[in-house]
Image (cartoon, rainbow, N blue to C red; front, side, top):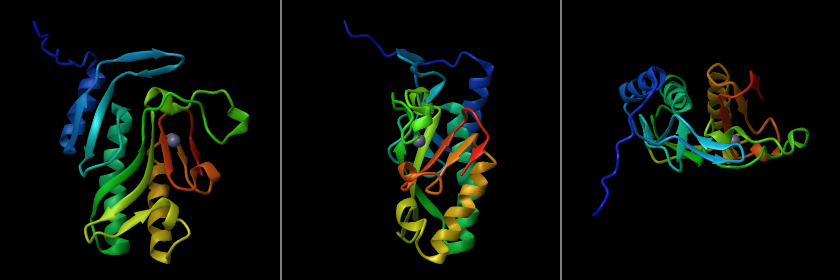
Length: 190
Ligand SMILES: [Zn+2]
């Protein structure tokens, strides 16, 4: 006898509201069951995210409030900046992922501390694909053309108003190729 998959039902009003807000932003997601993996690693109130209004690559489990902030940042900061700087819409976000059961990287003073990634409360954004096919990567664009530099600094500044911690190539070598956003402790913006 095969077991039918049990649909995951959001338990808290906050999560139900967050999922409804994600839906209004045309995000695509599936609610995941709460999981505690031990060792400080868990995915609670998390979704499997494939689209934040535009497709996003490489994301797995991400906490709903973080996914929502990412979708709002994409719509209210990334799209206007791309329009202004390149005269183009962004059609895809590229990421290095979200949930990862690991410690903080590249910060010796925090050695042994669990990363916000370990609770699906952090996401790493690595690039942006424009409607004309041009790709702006954090790694290539941070010190790239004047347009690329302006675009990436503008959306970082907007991210600093929306996320608790924002780390960019200005922070350290471990972040030379992506923006790290999380909703953990802060505010911290570099
Ligand atoms: Zn990160």
